[in-house]
Image (cartoon, rainbow over all chains, first blue to last red; front, side, top):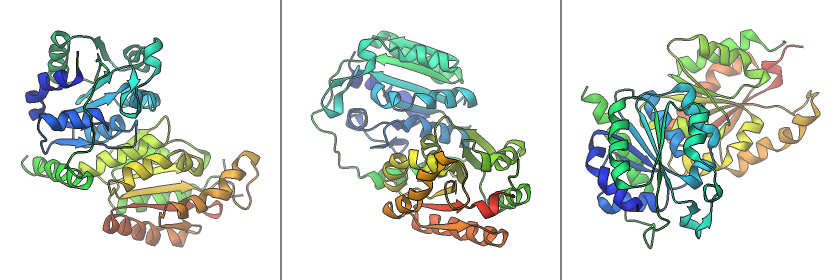
Amino acid sequence: MRRLDALRAVYLELDRCVVVTIMGAVAAELQSLGHRPNFFYLQHAMGLASSMGLGIALSRPDLTVVVFDGDGSLLMNLGGLTTLARYRPRNLVHVVFDNESLLSVGGFPTATSTGSDLAAIAAAAGIPHTSTVRTLDEFHPAFTAAVDRADLTTIVAKVEAVGPSGYVTDLSLLENRYHFQRYLRETRNRE
Amino acid sequence: MPVSVANSSLIYTCLKDVGVRLVSALPETWLVHLIRMAEDDQSMTLVRLAKEEEGVGISAGAHLAGVKSAMLMQNHGFLASVNGIVSCAQLYRIPLLMLISHRGAFGERDPWQTEGGGVTEHVLDALRIPFDRLEAPDHVARRIAKAQTLAYSASRPVALLLGRDLMWEE
């Protein structure tokens, strides 16, 4: 499964969510499908996308928050899984694209290439719903079920270690940040 | 435990007064009462962390979602959070109110705290993070309010160093 195809498969469903992605290929690929004001790309601070998702989910229980994480990023903040599990936001869907490498910085293999199992780690941390999926036919229904389940879910999606040729887009970091904040404010005001 | 309940309560009240509704924390001796007060307060969301840097992401998310937050941590937790502060809070212009217990300064008896105590202010300076000290009860209300005001007007992290004279009763 290619990550871009996985993102494309669920793209329309992201309309009803707010999305936080990690840096690099994930951010560039989601933007290549079409940026939306409910997408935020954390273009650095590796590991903190899931923590940011937790901050949004706890602050806005009316929204469904989707975090698109990666194996390299999650490995930098494994303790954060225990914090997610501890507060168990019912409105957080945590997707980990696991390509078993640090693709954006040269493709060096991560520990998932030698057997570390992020779904098992998430389950052992206390995440109530976890799974590993390897094909689009598995990923799409797993994602939809997670959004509909209304409970904290981590999906590890095994993907090929391929990505776009470049990662810089014409969306500046602060433009994205302020648009996203405004989007969140306007959805609150509409209540 | 001679951590000042009265001064912890004063700090907590001031955090509430400036609108803080979410606190992330990793326990340390000087912060025990503050954390218990957050835990016992139904109108406060307390997030207990595994590592302090998570708190930067949580506060960033809370801010974008319209909730004012503060981080409670020891100076060693601040040192452990530096990349998150730089490449999340500073890069994305997030107002971040950090209350940092300043262990390892004059009066410190624990040898393991002393190295961090000596570098904390230098690291804050190097990161260009405005900071002030809370060392006496009459500092607390004004300096917390002023720190919060600057954090929001500048859209940047600010720090308040909680000193021994305020937090510890010997």
